[in-house]
Image (cartoon, rainbow, N blue to C red; front, top):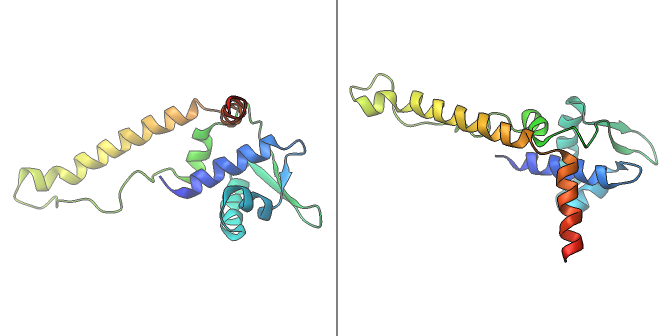
Length: 142
């Protein structure tokens, strides 16, 4: 899992919490606790994915284009982090003269693919609004 996914979810939940649903990269970065350039990179992906739009100028920033009630963490995951569970390297070699070494890569690929499908399915059951509701609930109990 990459940190861009977390930044994306944080940013979308923050925008969903704003009455005007608009914020600058600087204000989002301050809330996320990262730098504005990193937020702009993530927001660029979210814009390509149809989650946000931008407005230029003095009162510019990012605005939600999705309904927080229906957009899910699964949707965000598909745009920001799909494939991130699969390691870039796996042990073994299909040409080895060893049952373990020659099959490990294919077996592990299958395991990671199944795990990713389950993770994506889990995330698909959580709407952006659900995350915001959990935050409001935590705030009320503190």
